[in-house]
Length: 234
Length: 234
Image (cartoon, rainbow over all chains, first blue to last red; front, side, top):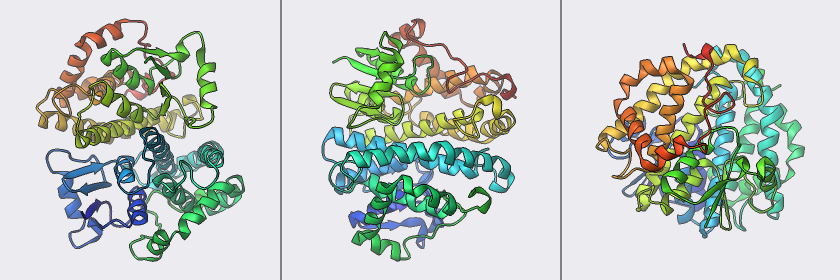
């Protein structure tokens, strides 16, 4: 079965957590809106009857149409060896992905504190305050949590013995924070040696390494979740 | 098996979506932090090894400790007839709950746009802007989406033929918006007749009705997600 991933074609965004899982799994998939059918195909799919997604990303898997990033990973994880096999293990991993989902939204809110419908340029002053708060309070709390889990689990993966979709997502978190906040992140990294090591090991995995070097990996830019605005980098 | 729910004892908050599911199911549960063991029992549980939750609510179900509201509902839904039985149905319902999760966070951000660590009183002016944005753009988008799904599904429930945990959560959304923004919500309700009807039917279900009349239902207040601040009600 060839999966169809639907997501905005110009950004990594939330779609990237799905792309990383598909790539690590070596799954057969097409990133629909980046192809000839473009964003129009995505919009059309959102208006279909039955189970229309609220927002991208969503994944067509045979007859299933699955929305919400963490839900897509819940589905893919079981099918591609990227999640534990037990119910307890699956629930735990999904819980961690939902915690990453919360973190990703807080990253987004650093540049969009007044809401997603206004431009960053219209909320700069508040964005600065929210970003200070994010780095003073939230980053240490979230990344400290995952650093602790990683350590308690032996250091190789956050949950279980093998790499999971949560490890892939944490790679993206480190990568994204480095892009968006190079100065702040450089100062912070000594607090999370385990996560930095995990990031490096994920980046070196053959399928991920090949993906990152390919044109399937979209470059970070200022339309995505992780945006580099000098004024926000402390 | 008696479930143990762990959540802040003074607010409905995110725990309320779990309480509503447990109550509708007639499940045997104890709301731990509201009992003699208090918040200390919750804090202790968060520091246990193994699978420590990032934040409340979390549910102890036998040996399982499950965190993240939507994840808890995913677990409970299957066991108590509050979700479809097919994999496709379960994924769809969970997707909808995750969309409600996003909405709940946006409700929270109306009074905390600069972040969760500062008081409302320190971010009033921004809160006003964010709330305007929320009501102009986000409420119509989210509630319009669920109104459409409800209509397309025949009007009795948002997904499937029976009441699910998503219907219970939508009851809480309507209830909460009425509490926090009475003027704005009153003006908006004519746009969502289906959801208002669903709210009323959920409120009239025997187990929910008994719950709402009991002291197990905590009253809305200004420490929870839905807060009534006159300045934000337009």
